[in-house]
Image 1 (spheres, helix red, strand yellow):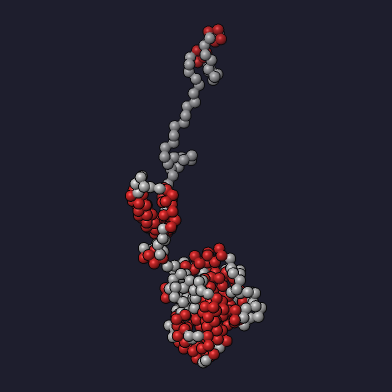
Image 2 (image 1 turned 180 degrees about the vertical axis):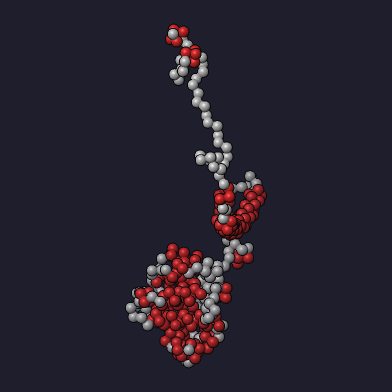
Length: 340
């Protein structure tokens, strides 16, 4: 009958003939929600059995507060570092802006009629560079913390008062027998990149990389670089010429004159020279390294006396190196009589 009339059939089987002709579907009555505090055994839930641990909550809040303070401290430190970097970038930007404005002004002054690209390039190529003193006054070139600076500006030890870099290098070398017995110590050049990295670390007063070196040549190289770049040498050639005006004077009262030369130095230079000579004497006493007092005297004469011999003739070269070399050899051979 339902198929004949074309009526829609419900998916749920009708309960009766009347439900079949209607659009009603079988529904399931939902059980009304239970009231609060009602349980399956019809007993109300007692709230008095719940205990709140206030001490545990307080400790938890204290720990959260401590973590927040630590995070705040970390953010403050990061902000300080970023602020310092910002000031550096700001200063560099100001310098570049000044240079740009100067170039722009020079470019505007050149008229289209007399401007010649070739002549302009020749002008830039032949233009005299600004001297170093002017760049230092404009704070473009600054002294480093340890290298390329004056001896009194270097970080010092308290006792004895000597540059820390010399103490660190000598300690690392003499604490390792393999380093002291290495053939060609102080004569073999170290790796350039490693020495430059050590230079950056030492300028930041960081000696961890220096103490972890596997080869003595980089340590010797950094020590020689420090002495070579001192703006005021440990012993000046003028002071040496005062007591040894000629090579012939080395044969007359040599030891007493060397003592007078050392006593004319200030305390820092005297202490530094004493540590260096004692170290060089220890190096020369080891046969395995194939380095004697003569080769060390020749090598360190140009470092301790800080000679500039790039543009001198061979005769003058021999004259300048003979006196400092012999002075250092005498200091090494008669160390106790001179320094003790």
